[in-house]
Image (cartoon, rainbow, N blue to C red; front, side, top):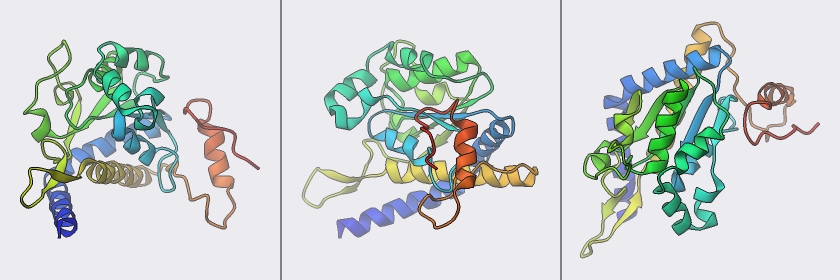
Length: 249
């Protein structure tokens, strides 16, 4: 029954996020709406498996078009998990990544890091603030408060970000203890981070509509409807959003 227990524990945390983190989600949505209304970009970064969350909000049906992903192939698990983990801990690497990323003052940078302790996400948050971006940090406060920083500044992500959202993931990420074993299973951060990010996008879109601004939202490419709407958004944001190729047709 460990699978059902996992679902129950995820549901408990979702309820806690809705109750306790809603003001932060609303504030993040206001920040995103402000940037989109001014024709800016929302940037997002996560190392290792957390890069999944960057892809979750980038170029998605029902998602905002002006999401600019900071995706580093060297830190994605499929290129070698040990190499990626080592690079996340390598001081100076995150600064280089951000310096080669196109972001303007006034934009928003979302940095996801469960432990919030490794140099790469810390340096990206620091470099973004130095360039004049607002930083939203999504992290586990339970995890981060129990481990020391691995960066020479001694800081962790939650101590740098302008706005912090606690994903309520436990120390070590996994949720379910198995009977007669010290092993824990059921990682929590992918589900909880996706929930938080999509809640921000939904709330930001609603905010834009209330301001009389047409939200730049993609529709599914697998619907049997004309794709002129998506074509227009690709054309509008292709010069600034990474990995946008030419829309066919």
